[in-house]
Length: 219
Image 1 (cartoon, rainbow, N blue to C red):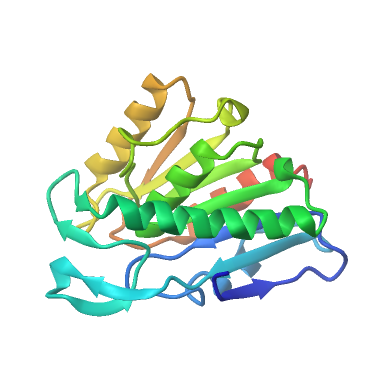
Image 2 (tube, rainbow, N blue to C red):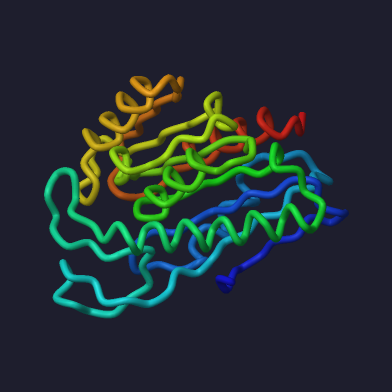
């Protein structure tokens, strides 16, 4: 089981958000975002921020750092270690199972991910065998579009994609391509861009909060 930072609501949780960080970061990264989501006072959402394992990264001269999978080449589609991304996806499925066993319905679990974490979030949510509440894809790309086995349970999954128009790490075209691929698969993703680089901004955070309130029926 992945080590995680967990923010518990004041009362018993009845919904969960599992939020994956990017390459070289940690589960601490998005914890400060939660108070700015604009969720109603007294909400019952548990936020789970897992820490990625530390592995060597080929494009960074083999340096060991927190990562969900190895990146072998920085081509426009990225050359990645598919076995590792599946392993990370399996670890996220373990976290989902823990929430189910704690009494959270699958329809009240949101999967979110930034950059590398977003690639794992795509793979996990779209293939998950039980219906989920939604998918948040931040400054990321659909790394396993050719390999993922789509689940009938999530064929109507709400998907929000967010990307910076000035992103030098994951060019905005990669987010747009993911949106087009999803549409070709029958999904109806919402695509939003912001004048930023490889980061998040307050307008985006507020929009994420609106999606969570809608998907989890918090208003």
